[in-house]
Structure formats: C-alpha cells, structure tokens
Length: 248
Image (tube, rainbow, N blue to C red; front, side, top):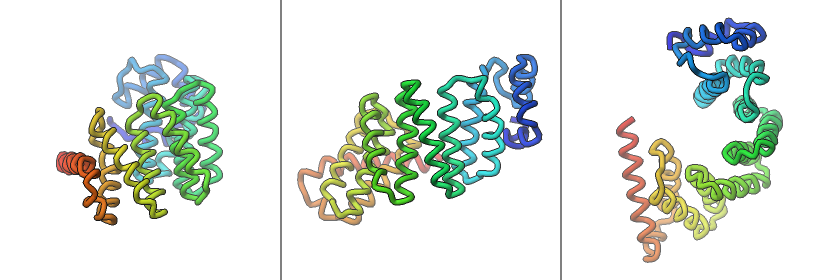
C-alpha cells in the first residue's frame, strides 16, 4: 500500500468521501490509489477498513483508528447490515481504549441487536465476547452470563477458537476462586478441542498460558494419574506454541 489507510483518510471530508464511494469510477480510483483489487465490492472495502481499524486499536492507536471509523460511519448506508454490527463492535473497542465503559456497552449492545436481527451466530459470539470483557473489567457478575451464552452458540456452530476463549475465561474464574478441579475441567476441554480440531497457531498462546499457569500454581495436579493423558496433550500444545513463536 502506498500510504497507510488512516493517513490517506485523514485528509478526506467524510461526506465527500461517501459520494466518491457511491460513484463507481471514483470508487475504483480510490481502490487503485490504495493498491487494492479494483474489483472489490463496497462491502469488501468497508470490511477491509474495519479490519485495519481493529489492527490499530489492538496496537492502542485509538486516534488513528478513529480516523477510519469516522469515515466508515458515513459509508454504512451503502453496505450490508452485518457490516453495521462489525462497525459497532469496533466502536465498542474505541470506547474501551478510552475507558468509557458505558459507551462501550451501548455500542456493543447495538451490535448484538443487529446480529440477532440478522441471525448471524458469528457476530453474536463476537458481541457476547466483548460484552464479557467489558463487564469483567468493571467487575460485574453478569460477565459470566455473557460468557456462557457465547460458549453455547460457539459450541452449536463449532467455533473452536471461541469455545477455547470461553473455556479459558471460565477456567480463570474458577482458578481465582480456588476451584481447582473445575479449572482443570476447563483446561481438559481446551486441550481436547485444540488437539482434535484444526486450530490456528496464532491463537494458541492464550490457552497455553492458561495451561502453564494452572499447573505451575497447582503442581499436585500432575500427581493425579487420571490427569496424565490431558497433561501430555497439553505439553504437545506448549511445544506447538513455542514453534509458532520461533516462526514469527
């Protein structure tokens, strides 16, 4: 790309940019300038913008991400409703970075409402996971409710990475309550999912950290013979994580 997306967009007036995207010839000129496929649909283009926003927010570059998000907002009338749900997820991310938890809740609840109307399980899970993070951060008991609902949907549709996300956090809740057997049950579920299903190496560090934390704080788990098979599988996952880190 010849210029970072946020740098390109910061000089654009939102309303004028919306008109550019509405005109097919000007839209293709924008795609060409950004060195993107000129056959991209408007939906694909806005999805790309939202992915770039997420990358910036993950790097805690809220100001740069908001430049893109403000432009996306004026493009929403031109794209599908499911993209609206993703927009409100990213808006929730931006509020979280600003420690505005009420703003984050409102944005993500709006995303979840759209996901429900569109009957999109993937977007439902994305919203529920973020609602869990918000409520956990502010210490609300309702956090577990969102987590269990997300796990239910993720299990129904075999969203393995999301099931693992839920199990890690359920396990941590039990871990901090000193409910070690329940924490290990979550660990076992995690290890079985990762061992028996295709699983992205990029997502393997979080469950690996949980496995190592649980065992290092509770070495007595290793002495229980019925845990041995699970622990050996967990060690294999640790080795996968190490290999993934070396390949980065």
